[in-house]
Length: 543
Image (cartoon, rainbow, N blue to C red):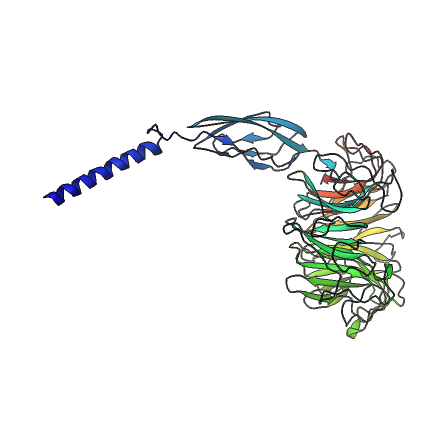
């Protein structure tokens, strides 16, 4: 009987404990009140005007919550139940938001700012949004030659890389440095530095960035970015933003400096890195001999590094494994890493090349898997060589579309010999046959294709391009965007839709085709422009 009573008492105690636990969880116990909300004050992501936007307001404490936000830019709304902000914002500017959240445990308020970037805005700014200023060109020239140049851009346009001699971006030793601008969080980071954070002791330029912003490849004359750099030459480096490490890419598979047949210094330079979307494959040009099979001892070749496999391959081999009999440059690797396009004066990279000289650049494509090289800048008659140089190639994600610039007059009909941009569709194996020409009464150059190959950015000095709308070029080289098969539209324009009052050059279009990065001396693309006619790096939305 006593054992039965004991069991009954235990059961009763368990019921009481369960009830008390329930009351406490519901806030009815009195001794454990529900936690009041506390808004997380993390900065909001930057927005691009008229582009999709999403951000989450969050809070600690006991929910559910109800959110209220005042001061939002036009087009942005908040979901009261989740705190999610969605857009697009339809007006640029800086907005001060008053945020309130209510929960079972009380109410909290917070003030946060939200930035909506205009259709054209500066990329060469520091983390305080101050425009690049100070310094010189890296060649001893002072302002107005102080400048920010050579921008590259990631697939979605979030990350922009550029080089600058400015002294207020992070580099302080008067040299040209490479920077990464994160347009989502509004931060600018010095990239051309040693793994311990020491900034490069000489000029760095021409950067490219992986889709996720983790890897940045660039070339540099600095000798202190790694230990043991003694070739007195421009090298290719890779900076990992996740680990903070910087390594040299333009070296042998054993990690040693390559041979310099023409001597150290500029005769051993490496240049023009290009990176696959994931940052694993890097193509570059170099005068250095990095593999025994590189028999070309007097002119530059193209190499491809596979980081994960730790392999390095020579792309510019002549037919039968012979040394290329001319120099190669301007490599561009497709986002999927399957193809590398480049220019070369060599005439022994493909069989039966009709070019009898090694004086004129042609455009070629290298298949990374099959090692096959295809000549791209061909005339309608296979026995006739192009009569002018073809250079600066760009390639779509899967290699199905290639564009390049050329002064040749016989790639198509009606060409006057002024440098134009040509677009070709390519099947990945044989020489293309259909050439579309984009050009006018002055030079057009520096094409850049979107991943799907549907959009092409270029710069042009021509005043007779069939642009829509037909606005004045101000007599300056400007940036344009073409949707293949449709009209050409101006991209280097200010908020009033007017083209800049200074030259704009070297566009890089984002993989998704929404944004174009470029540099410009125009002083009226943004307001204010505090450094006058110095070159700045800009980002514009595709018109």
